[in-house]
Length: 305
Image (cartoon, helix red, strand yellow):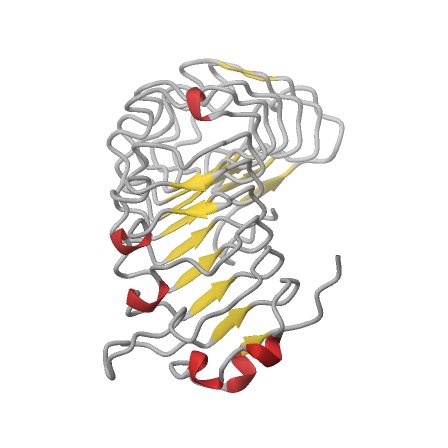
């Protein structure tokens, strides 16, 4: 991810080949770009004096060690790009000013209780492509966070993690090994408007489990092992986009998507994908999609075994 500073922001961009953080970085630096180097650790005084730093990228290095006081001088830093390194845990003592943390493609297997303590300004965490299992999240791992966005895709999750922040608007758990969505799995997340569960092994979504998400607009369940349309969809008043392609759905009923009562749906669908399912689209009744805004919003297609 490139850093694009406003014209009046001073940016330091260092060439490839560094094995440590350079000395004598100008103290008025706002954006520090150290990506695509061979830095192996961040030391205690690496960022001394950089009190104006707004964003730091150490993406695509070989960092496996961060001193507990590394980030102490960075009182104003809001964005930290730490992807494609060798970290096994979340760095300690991240700045309280931090808003965005991207730490995907590391080696994180554990998130300890209080790993994000004091980070009340944090809005977005991207931590996909780490080899973390459900058991790797200690109770209280996300305590105190008021996140809007969280991505834990391409990991080793077998179920929806417990105790994620209840403030979430977007939760992306795609490309995991989740087997099912059980009744209480989503009960905390009443503010979600986008949920990504594509490319998992989901065979069953327990009835009423999705009704805990009254504000949901977009639901990704493509590339799973579902055999029928989830039963809660007709009662989801604001749901507008649902991806169900590449499953094992063989039948679509007339009330699978839309409520029976007129006026109960607050927002019409503008996207339903059902292609690559063993369902004969000519057998689906037209009234099935009575709450879809446009017929072009429905994507059927050929099923190939």
